[in-house]
Image: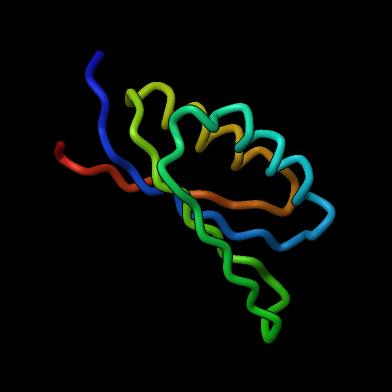
Length: 81
């Protein structure tokens, strides 16, 4: 099993979507190294960073599922290791 460390950057614009996002992240909890969330009240958004160690397919699948949640956007950045 070849895994990589990756970061998924998430921006939540609709607070109603937070429960769905948290449920999804819980499903992938075995791969998550850590996460940090920062509310930005000035723009009424929440910024979340999730760090994972997983296979490419798992990271891409999670990022895609996050991006399909209404009011949520995500992008992944991969390490070379």
